[in-house]
Length: 140
Image 1 (tube, rainbow, N blue to C red):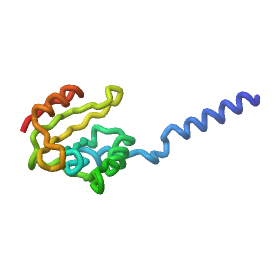
Image 2: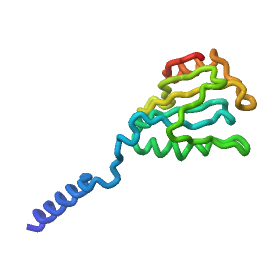
Image 3: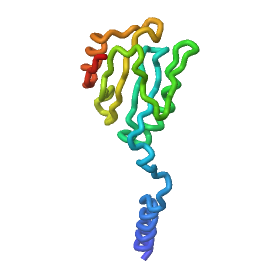
Image 4: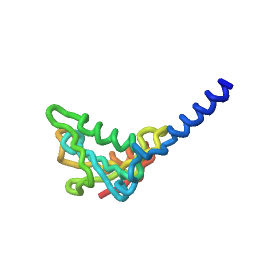
């Protein structure tokens, strides 16, 4: 009789943990069509765009948290919600980049000239980098 009672209690507890309350679930419509960016133009001459509807919750939080951790001296990366990387001084883009083959998330990286000391990207160099990470090279 004890085993049966414990089994029933465990089943009820597992059912309660099955997301029935709806707490912690995100509204995907909030992210539909939204593109956020991490502006690193002054640091590395790059800017990264994320299609938020294609990312999982953990990755959405992670990109916003990690962007300002990119530093160079007193300069820091700037995370911008609902903001695309600018076209001015852009030499090329690499769309659909995947740095980690194990990771399911893609992003677009934009490369610039004249925005960061020591980083003046040329389209040819971007193309080589882009192809190494299975991205689609787009020259400007």
